[in-house]
Amino acid sequence: MQSIEINSVDELYSVAEKILSSSPDQNIFALYGEMGAGKTNLIKAFCQVLGVEQEVSSPTFSLINEYYSPESGIIYHFDFYRTESIEEVFDIGYEDYFFSGNYCFLEWPERISKLLPENFVYLSIKITGAEQRLISWQSM
Image 1 (cartoon, rainbow, N blue to C red):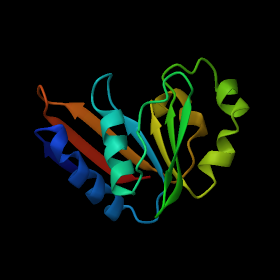
Image 2 (cartoon, rainbow, N blue to C red):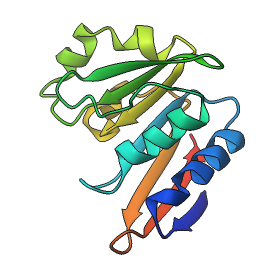
Image 3 (spheres, rainbow, N blue to C red):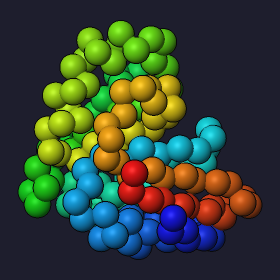
Image 4 (cartoon, rainbow, N blue to C red):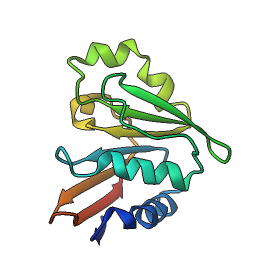
């Protein structure tokens, strides 16, 4: 497992670059961390690194947001926090997204752990101070 400690959200761009470059064959990134740890901010940084120009925000109520990158194509951003049942995830056709080959960034993946594919990047964000975070990741 690789880890990096940051002191501010300003460092997230370089962290996102490092994670993406260390996981070149991965397209699913599952972000674990408590509320307010910075999952959405890290996904914003991933999207910025990947060339997304539109606003990136958490799809808390819509479950999924779709972004476009000239370099990477369509990018999917999921937030499973308000998911009440696995059937909801089946209803949106999650397999079409997860197995599309496009980047998928997942917030609150523990809510759908049974549906995660065999191969993905596990990311953990731990709050270590007011703005400090410990970010760890590994390919599964």
